[in-house]
Image: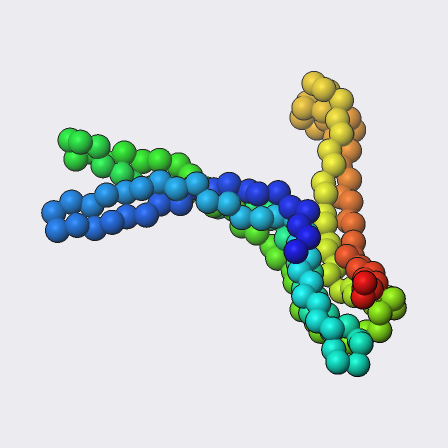
Length: 155
């Protein structure tokens, strides 16, 4: 497994319900965001290499905020703000039979990214009616594809 990823933390809660009371435990959990490549090689009887390849690309799309309700010792509701990450994931899994020293190319994980860039002259851009002449917005669309070149060798 090859991983080039960031571990994104988020808060999760576990509630244990008893007969008369309930206990809440806060936990920090993690989700990996980035590129993870899993390769499982096997050598066949005739000397070829059987590869199970699973590339995965994930990115943080947004955070989803929520309120967790807890009770203090007097029974009053105490709210805690938290958020969970919304992760966009692309993955493909394939099996390849290849000779040693040969190269296989795997692609198809395409990502579209849209960036909004705003530029403005301070103060002047905020004046009603004439402010539009002092600011500029650009939307940049980028398309990228993850392409893998794998060359297995029997040593």
